[in-house]
Each structure stands twice: as structure tokens, then as C-alpha cells.
Length: 553
Image (cartoon, rainbow, N blue to C red; front, side):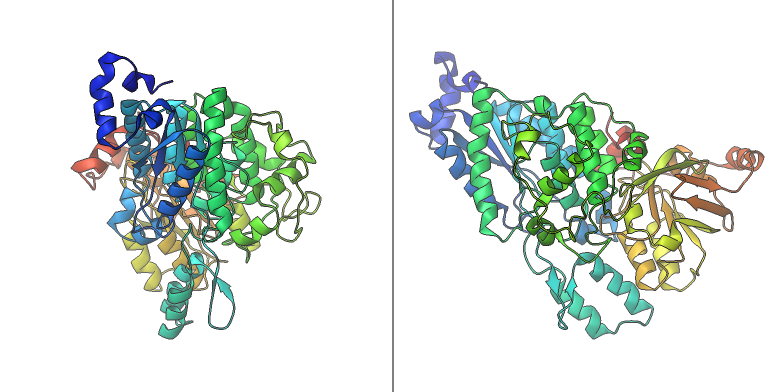
């Protein structure tokens, strides 16, 4: 066992003395030591209950003959960080989480790990750590929040809350209406209730084989979540016994399965950052261009919020991620021979699985669309690509051409939107918000929600080298690569330039001649870095482009 390095032989007597200091008995020390990586804190709604999940996991580990040892991982609440400098610190925590978990796991020589994440960067950060460490690991997330209910009985969620602010500024909603959303949009612990980034990644953790069935969808307040946690604690001991490691599970075929499920579910565009970063740690290459090839033959089967009016609890009731995967197998779209953390193949996990609600999970012969939820666009404005959640785009905006309204920060764009300076037909361009330029690649939920809330969602597009929350809907195109700070053509766009967007054709073009772009490039100079000290400054020096997963090199 790995832990023998800290507990076997007279040479390790000093190490054992410190284990005795922790109160461990000889019996506990003799068993496999299982690191329980808990993301519990008191500022993130999705993490406020993870102390209970951790205790349930620890009970499962003990029941199966192991000794659980808890240590923490940080997590940022994207909703609370949204719209101010705090959002610069969201994506960057993904790498902090991976690095700190690596340090703790190797320093203390754990025999196995149970990862307990829940929110946006916490899940991929711990998946990156699992792939990097490659010791037996299982995931048990905290689960999704329940949907809210407004006073009139309508169901609601966080994306509606953000859009309510735009509706207020447009004079379509009064202060009492905003308060109704404010008090009711987020009614319980858990990751916010739509198919936002946190729930997208939790579902994909299950799809890739690193979590037990139900991990992505069982609601946080349900007792079934505690039972799942106990089973995860017991199952990690089986993984240790059989020496089943993350890279045995996270294979190229497993990543292909995850991308396919991503398209069927209509996940957040952030998955296009996180899956390549996780794959990189597993020694697997994911080409952004492959997303369109997968999307082309993967039907979109789910329209959860923000794309529709259903929520994670509905997906769970309909059969969850396994029911979606079962539909996909009807056309042979998944490799069911892959290994999973259950110790069985995907094919074995799918035995007896049924789609219990064909309105929540559309049958594969009656999908919402014949192609997947995400599209990668390319053209002279995004030579290396950009991404859009096409399942959440209004039909009339699938093709759009209009004049650029150019802003060098999110704050400038928000002021113009709320100031009613954006009109139907416009293409809002927000630049210098990429991984390097931000730095930190902020999410643009505030401007996209303002556009939708003010009634412009079916007539205005938004393009950025930043990224979007999974709660975003509309013609919101992010991850433009190369980014402005790296000299990408988005830096050369001028007010009034015509931009053409064709999502079905996967193209995005700036209607400016090559000669004019060359003239503008000769005159362009990169602005001074927005942040020159601290972690963000170091991050900006190390981070790669969004099309590469914004990994650190």
C-alpha cells in the first residue's frame, strides 16, 4: 500500500507517532488510508452540506475496512463572484484545487481517495487531480439544488433571477417582482438547479465512469444522497483492493462517451474548457474540432434550464444520466465496454435501465434536435474556434448578421446594455476578458442575462474571449481563440464592423478584408495587464488558450 511508506518499519516510527497524535489506533493505522477530499465551506450553497456527505463517505469507508482521513479543497461560488473582480478568481481555482490535492495526497501517501466536490471549478479541478495522481479514486458530489417556486406557483431558478434584473432595468418587472425571485430562486442547498456548469460536470463525472449512478442528479436535500455517499465510501475500498485506477477508467473511449453525453444533455459551454484539461492530465488529447463531429450525430435529448423549463430533479426522476446513456446506446453512440468505478463495464451498469419520462429525456427517435447541444464555430474572428450552447439559442438567432458594439471589459458592456444603448440587430463584443487578458476568463452571465431580461435575446448576439455561465441562454458565443490579449482578431474589431454568425454552418466571420485587418494589426499594441501582482499575474503568464482548455504550462 502507498501508506506503508508512512507506517511500516522502525524507520517510520516518527511518522507513526504523528498518526498516534491524531488519535488513531493501531487497528486504524494498519488499514488502508483513504483521503476524503471535502469541499465543505460556509459560503457556497452547493457546499454547505458537504460536511454531512463527508461523514457518510467516512462511514462507508469504515464499514468496508478502511480508515478515512478528511482534508479540504477550496471552492468559489460563481453566482456570488459574478459581476465583479471576484469572478477573475473562479476559473483559476481549478488549477489551485488540482495542485493542492496533489500535494496533500502525495505528502501523506493515501491508498485511495474519495472526492467530494459540487460546484463549477471544484469538480474539474478534482478530476484533474485524480487523473494526475492515478491512485484508486471515486467521486461523490453534493447533488443539485431543488427548483424554486415563485409566489404564483411558477417554478424558477438562478438563471431566471439574473434575467429578472434585466427585466427590472427594462421596466418590465418592479422591485417586488425582483424580490420574489430573490427569495425563491435558490430554495435549498446544492448546486443550482438547472443544467449549469456544476451539474453538467457532475453528470459528466458519472458519464465518464468516475462516479456511481445517480451522482449527477440525486438532489442534495434527499436522503438518497447520503446513501449514495456511503456506497461511494464502500466502493473505494473495492477499487483499492482491485487496484482500479483513474486512468483505467478515464480512457479515450470514456472521454468520447462523456462528450457524447454532453451533447445529448445540452451541457454548459464550460465543459469545452474542462474536458480537455482533465483529458490532458490523463494523457488523452481532445481536439476541440471533435466536438462538432460528435455533435453532428448526437441528438439533443434534454432541455433543462436555461434551455427549457425542467430541472435536475426532473432528470433524476426520469432515470438520470444512465437513462440518457441508455437512449444513446440505441444508435450505438457509446462504447459500453469501458470500465467504470462500479467495477463493472458501462454495459453492465445499463442493464435494466429505463427512460421513465420521455418528456424529460426525449427518446432518441424524437429528439429536440438531431445535433448536440454545443457547437464550435470557426472563422477569421475565431481562427482557433469559439463555442456556443446552441440548444439554448432562439431559432431566429441561429443565423445573425449585424454591427459590432465593441467593449474592452464586462463593466463597459453592462453599462451600455442597462443604458439602453444596445438595439435589436447588434452584436455585442466583449474582449480582453480571456484567460490571459482577464486575467482569469470571467463568466459573462450578467450581460447575457441583461440582454435576455430586457427583451433582446431574440435579436442581439454577444461574442467574447471570456466565457459564460451554464445559466446563460441566447446567442452567446464565448472562448474566442486566440483571445484579444494574445493578438487574436477580436482585438482588431472596430465599432460598426459587420459580424456574421452562422451556427448551423459552424462559422463566424468579421466582414473586414484581410488587407484592412493587416493594417489594423500593424497599428495594434496590447494593453497593459489588468493585474500585475499576486496569483492572477502568475496565472496570466502560465495559462494557455481557451481552445486548449486554458491549462497551465
